[in-house]
Image (tube, rainbow, N blue to C red; front, side, top):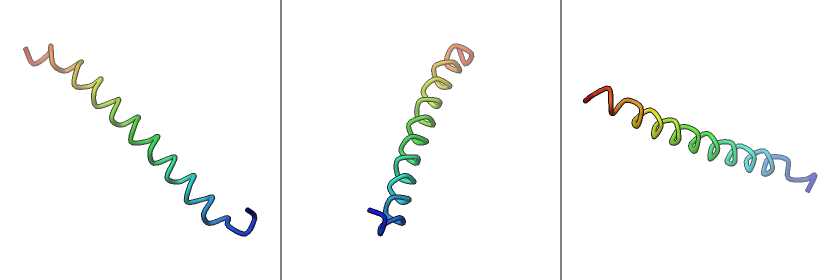
Amino acid sequence: MSGRPFFMLLQKTVDFAKLGMSIVGLTNVVTAKNSQPAME
């Protein structure tokens, strides 16, 4: 395990990227719902 620090770092980066995408997606959904009544 100690011989693959790069792989562990890559895995953490991928997990962080997935988390970031989830947050962005959720934010977009909330923003879309909030801005819909304003358009009407």
